[in-house]
Amino acid sequence: MGALLLRCILLVFVAAHGAVAGRLSPNYYRHSCPRVEQIVADVVSAKQRANPSTAAGTLRLFFHDCFVGGCDASVLVSPLSSDRSPERAAEINLSLPGDSFDVVARAKAALEVACPGTVSCADILVLAARDLVGILGGPRFPVALGRRDARRSDARDVEGNLPRTNMSARAMTVLFARKGFTPRELVALAGAHTVGFSHCGEFAHRLYNFRSTDGYDPSLNPAFARALQSSCANYKNDPTISIFNDIMTPGKFDEVYFKNLPRGLGLLASDAALWEYPVTRVFVQRYADNRTAFFEDFARAMQKLGTVGVKTGRQGVVRRHCDVL
Image 1 (spheres, rainbow, N blue to C red):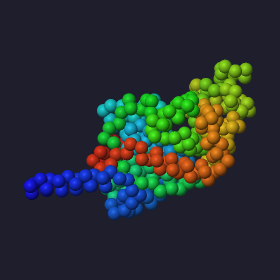
Image 2: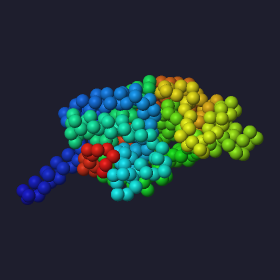
Image 3: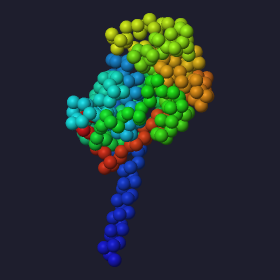
Image 4: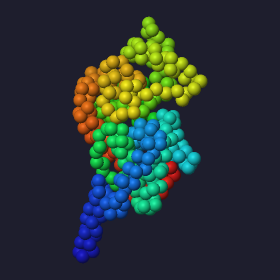
C-alpha cells in the first residue's frame, strides 16, 4: 500500500510539473534571464537602424516559422548545417531576407553571453517581431515566453502550410481556419504588408499578358499598373527588382495598406483578393477607417500566432546556435 501511495504521489507531481512547464508566461525568464527583453530590444533597435528592411523581413520570418509546425525556430536552421533539406530550403522560403536571420543570430549571441543556454531561438524571434512592429509605429503588446526550439526541420513540411501571393481570399480563409484563425484575424495579420516589399516576379502575372483590354489586371489602378509595368520591365533579367507593398507610407506601420486596397493599389493578387471577397472585405474596410481597431486586432492576432504549435519543456531544446539543430 505504501509503495502504491508513493507512486500515486510521484505521478501527481510529474503531471503538475508538466502542466507548469507547458505553460507560456510573460515572466518565464524572470529569474533565469531577467534582462532578456531589454537585450533583444537593444539588438533589434540597432539592427533596424542599420538595415531598415529588417522589420518587414522578421515579421515574415516569424509567420513562416509559426505556420509550419508551430513557433519553434525550425525555419532558422541553415541548409549548410543539416543532413536533410530544412524548411529554409523550401522554394517559398528562399526569398526570406538575410537581415531577419541575422537579427535573431545577433540577439542570440548577446543572450548566450548574459544567460548561456537559457533563452530559446523561438522566443527570440517572437520578441524581435514584436519589438520591430513597435519601432515602426505599430502597436506595442506583451508576449508570453517559454517556447523550446524544434529538434527537426524538414522542407517537405512547408508546402500547403503557407499562403501564396496568387491565392484567392477564400483559399486563404480555409488555410487560416486550419490553423485556428478567423477571417478577421487573417485580415489583421495581412496588415503586416503595410511595411516591406515584394519582388516583381511575385506579381508580374498581373502586369503583363493579362487577359484584359489593357493587358494588366483590371482590378489594379490604371496609373499604378502602368508605373509597375515600367518599374518591373526588366524583372526577368534582374529578379531582385522589388516594389514597396504599401507605396504610400512604406516605412510606417499604419492602416494605409487597407486604404490602398479599394483604390486598386494592392500590390499582390492576394492583397487585392481581400477586398474582392465579401467575407474579408468587411474587415479591410473596418481597418481602413479605424487605425485603433486595426492595431488592437493585429496585436491580439500576433499574440495568438505566437502560441501556434509551441513546444515546451521536454518537447524541444534550447539551441546554442539558432541555425544549427
